[in-house]
Each structure stands twice: as structure tokens, then as C-alpha cells.
Length: 197
Image 1 (cartoon, one colour):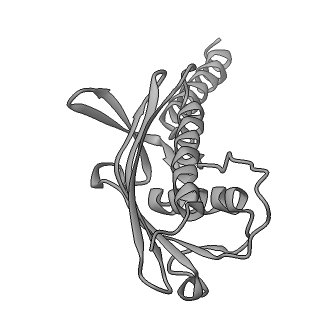
Image 2 (spheres, helix red, strand yellow):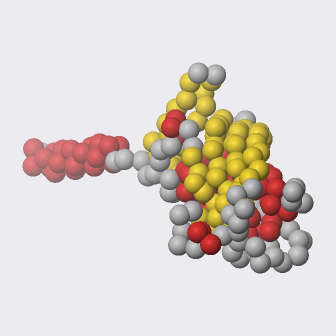
């Protein structure tokens, strides 16, 4: 009888150990990107533009998504992360939007090798990049568009709050992408505005 019980006990011990080890396994990290969301029917253009530098608040300048819990509280989502540094995500997304909005392939990210020859350079200072799950993504950014040939510049501010109708961090990333589309449109409008003498 004792010989029959011993294998059963061994199986139970091994099964329990396996369950404990499985429970100790780290959760899998999920990675998110921002995406271009604009389209246009504007005529094709040969102008060139360099996007950057882009700065973001120190509180969100990290791999983890930072979500707002209340007026004075945020939380770092250790397993929900940006696929690349946030300032690079913003720069790339704005550049891709401007390719569509200005109908030119000559949009680069500063400090790219061809950015020195660009007709325009736009720098972006993001002052708010708030993520509230199930509620909204908020963007507040000051941007300066500078024409290289004569140094003429325009400064603008884009403030927008994009609603998030469903829970989940993919929904937040999509809302931030829509906010960056609004920023990109404001920059494109400034590029296409008549030049003042």
C-alpha cells in the first residue's frame, strides 16, 4: 500500500511545483505605437520639411504608458509600453501625417541626413500628453515652423482632447494618434498659409 501511495505523492508534489512556477512567471509586456491617420486631396508638392526636435514632459518620457488616475495621481503601466521613445513616436507620426497632408515625400525627422536641406523645420514642445483610460487622450503642444531660406517663423498651439469610448490601451494609443493628426493639420495649414511680407 505504501508503495502505491508514494508515486501519487510524487505526482502531487510535482504538479504543485509546476503550478507555483507558472504562477511566478512574468506577465507578457504589450507594446503600442502611434499611427498616421490623415488623408488629403491637396495637389502634389515638391516642398520639403524636417520634423523635430520634439520634446515631451519628463513625467511621460519613459517606456511605460503613464495613465492619469486623478488630478494629482498617475500610474506607470509596467507591462503596457511604447514600442519606441515617445518623442520618436510623435515625430514619426507627425512626419507621416505631413507627407499625406502636404502631398510631398520630402518630409524627414530631425536630425536626419537630409533635414539640413529642408525648406521648413518644425519643432514641437509637447506640454501635456495625458492618458485617461476609458475617457480621453489629451494633447497640448506648442510648435514653431521656421522657413529656412529667410528664417521667417510662425508659432502656434494645438490643444485637443480626443474621447476614448472603450477601455484598453490600444484605444488610448488610437486617440493619441487622432490628436497628433489635429496637430499635423495645424502645422500643414501654417505651411500652406500665404506668406506675409
